Image 1 (cartoon, one colour):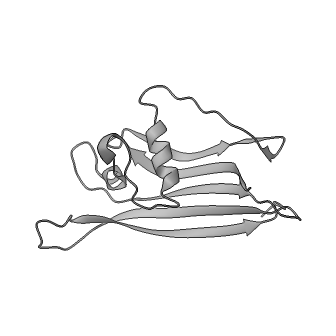
Image 2: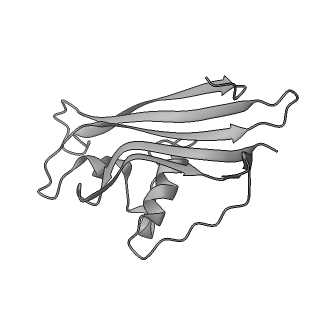
Length: 141
């Protein structure tokens, strides 16, 4: 079974732009091999945000939290509820079960856009995103 080796999150802002992941790499390896990992964070430390971001790779626009109230689009609003579009990336590096050894990076690039709509029931902002994958042999790519 493939194993998560590393996670990288770049450019994410949340909690009304008060917190974020500027360029964070989470290394889940020991001696360059993926290993069992336990992460602990304090209350309000971003556990839910981290899980929500990771799930975007397989299920974009996934809601999280109490009654699925936390939405990715809310990351694009500052504390004054101003819409502030920007771009962020979330990547997971997997060590594959293959011989010779190979790794696969799966990722998503997300931004938000303002929509031109006259329908009062339709939201006037939305997500634009694309997925990407990169396979490598860990030879200094």
